[in-house]
Structures are given as structure tokens and as C-alpha cells.
Length: 234
Image (cartoon, rainbow, N blue to C red; front, side, top):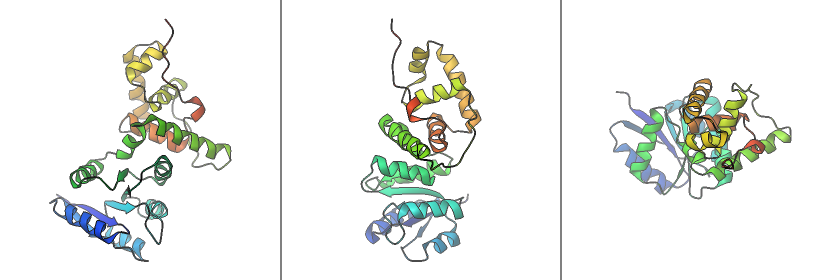
């Protein structure tokens, strides 16, 4: 079985070496210590890591900028961003880089290895970071809306969803379950499940969270249309 090649880039030597040592104990990991230097992109390109653990405050080239360069020049490398003080603003910026995960440095070694294996199997933990806290999802949506209103358009992609599917995706982004959405729209829960299945298929999304993150990235749902949890009057 091929090993998962993991590279660590962090400004703090003790933290970086400690993480590398912990990961190197895993039989399915091949760990590369990416000590910060001026040729870090050359090191990444030479090793072609499957995962890049990257400090968001990487010193000589800020982590977010480096993550964008990795996405551009090393598209097969999946970036996991690390931070000591996670906040909404950082999450918004990290989503734009295409990073697959956003982790607090207080994470345990066991949690980190599980996350790396999840990503290797095709999961996107950053989706959970967005949808676990609906307020953050709304914050991200509003910032994207601001970008578009100021004419700073990102990638223009035609919306592949019907108006009903887009409406349901908005409700999902607001943190509503299938049952809650069915109650709000006064249609059956099975109908909602059918719509969700169509949404995932059309967007080639892994799950509900992934579908919302795709919609956020491409501006398919707007902050003004974000649907709060409001039940019909009896």
C-alpha cells in the first residue's frame, strides 16, 4: 500500500519537529520536515506531498499566500491550514485558497492522524468547520456577496440547480435539517431528500456540507437569500 506523504511547514521549530515525530510513528505515513526557507515551493514541488500541513502565519511568505500558490502549481497536494487563534475572518480566507481542512494547533496527535486519513479517503473536513456553526456560514456568504457587489468577481460559473434546489440549499446553509426544511416548505421529507440527492449529484458533492461550500465559493447562493429557521403559522 502506498504511504501518505505528509509535509509540515511551520515557523515554530519545536512544534514542527514534534508534529513530524508524532506522524512518523504511523506506518502509513511518510513525513517530510519542511523547515521554513526561501525555497519552500521548490521543496514542495520536489517531494510532491499528498498533504501539506501549513502554519497560517508562515513567516517569509504568509500561509494563505503559500496555500494559493500550492493550489496553483501543485494541485494534487491537499493543504491543511493550522492556526492558534481560529476566527471567522481566517475561515473565509482559507476557504478561498481551496484548503481541505482548518485546524486549531491544540488538536491532539490522534485527531490529526484521523483527519489526514479522512482527507486521504476523499473527505473535506473544512466543510464541517463551515456548517457546524451557521453564523460562520452566514458571515462567509455575506463577505462573498460584498465581493460580487464591488465588482471583484471570482470564477463565473453557471448555476446548475433549479430554483427549488437553490432554495433548499439556502435552507441547508442556514443549518436546517431535512425535516425542518420539509416543515417550512410544507412538503414531504422524502421530497426534500430527493432534492438533496439531486443537488449532490449535480454538484458532484460528497455531502450536504460539501454542496454548501461549493455554492459559497462560486456565489450560487447569496447572503440576502439565506433562509432562517421559520416555521409556518398554524
